[in-house]
Image 1: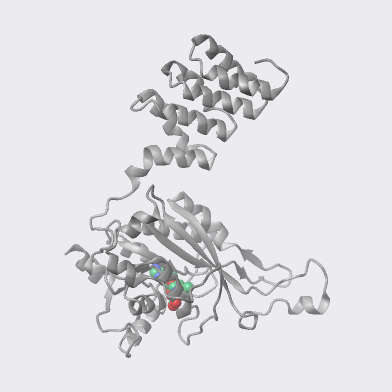
Image 2: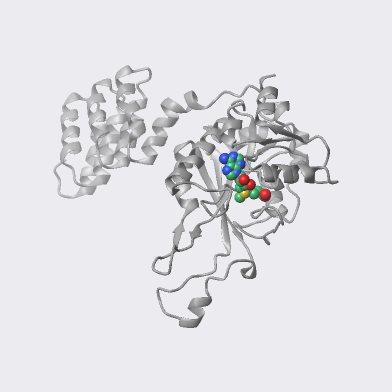
Length: 407
Ligand SMILES: C[S@@+](CC[C@H](N)C(=O)[O-])C[C@H]1O[C@@H](n2cnc3c(N)ncnc32)[C@H](O)[C@@H]1O
């Protein structure tokens, strides 16, 4: 055990781990306290765990305090064998606040996951009739209070961009992020187990106050991401929406003239589609198997689907709403991340592109839109042939929605 060669020490530890004798506990404790080679130290913890001896619990508790997350995880694994052990539970549960994410995930799954995932009142493919094909003119936070747990199959949305348009004025960036945090926390509650949230955002620039100041750039997707993960959204993919250079604001003009380093400002031709899944222990297969075979077959994506995470799509312009989704973008998201008959939610409905596309693809939609101008705009378009594909769409005030939600 004191051999200068770490390989020898490693094999010594592995071997004495197989001999469950109290004398070796002192040796293993010494290794935990003094060993400098991480491989040897990690093996010591695994050895202790493999002994499954309740007398070793103090050693494993000690290993939980180690700086190396892999040692902590091995100690956790060693302690998990002592089922229904109050002492072990009391030592492990506080690790939900451990600085390391792997440690937090393991503890979450063991002690918290099944308690925080809301139970689905309906079979997985089904949702409540009162949520089908409706637009609610309300603040999303108010409307979501009337939506039962686990009602939504897919959320696809583009949140208001921080102070970039009239409808998105917040006192501070912090207030803005906290607002989105609240929205996506509630969205998590109303989302069915293991289903997806796709958020379209991009960094924005707030122009400078005067020539004496600089403009300020906000990395919205990157700043929002930690909030989503903390609320139980598991990060899955980042899809880049690539637009033609001619369609975006020209920022490179100045640099083209002066060519001075540091003054380089590329034209921003991309936006992100951040893909998240509601955290679950179940595999995607579980979600898919919950649908009837004919629904799976009818929902299969036809040839011509996108094979990379860079989607080249032209932006779309609208005379009333300044930030509308192109239908092609909605089509791809809805086809790739939902089944026919699913409920697609957009908390920031805008001009209604997500709903219209969802309907045309055999899905139901539910969205909220705060601004009366856009709500009325959707309503006026709904009467024109083909916009929402039928006349079933209901346009409701908050109180009307609250009333039908209670029935
Ligand atoms: C970026 S736009 C969405 C555009 C939409 N994707 C489309 O294709 O038309 C964001 C929308 O969110 C709405 N909005 C902002 N804050 C809201 C809130 N608290 N509740 C509901 N809607 C809100 C804005 O009025 C705006 O129409």
